[in-house]
Length: 323
Image (tube, rainbow, N blue to C red; front, side):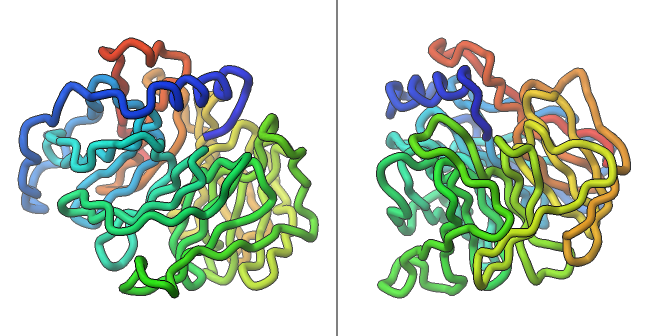
């Protein structure tokens, strides 16, 4: 999620809505279907519930999709094979922005303006732990898993929040730590009026992190030991309005929300060079924010920032398109 005046206005509205009730859970989630199911029968669009504004995405190896609501933090789970889904975590106020699955079947959820990081059971939606990563002017925005744990961006502060990998993410040793960003990193003006770090991924070699900077309109490679950032050299293309990042092999997909497009790059192994390959556009994109790959398709979340989310009947979609 990146910020313009309109999106900052949305954040305030979302906070005011707080724990607004959703229309209720949908029908039970369908069981995962056999791998032999024809891809032609899979839906190319999944509607999220009314009053649920999606932003982040995670997809399991079995094709189960998860997304969180910017309105009240609820978590929605759906089957990519059938489109059937239900809310597994009913939100209690703090928004859910980026989220990823870890190796223990847990969702690691960025809590936006609350400064929280939540650990959620991907099966039944139980909140297993809540960590206060930051206070004051903060926006914990997106997350990737790798380089020893989970790394979260903070769009209003020049830091990454790190949650160590491990089975126990609720004990005393599981508190998040903060890593300051330096080197070539472009400082973000304080006060929450400008957006810095947003989407985050690993480099193809797995040794470092890639972070897109909204205000600087640049991509950076970040050393997870020191926080030293080096600007990635782009050979064509753009990361302006860059929101979610998705790495698939050595291919990087940059979801550009207000550009209504996804720019595709081929990365060097260390993430220091990115060659533009092509741009993906689709008339169904509605301020796309994040994406995931499954079944040879790209699954893209529409946050629909311009929609009237004060209307409880407003809904959005997650659409699929070719890689």
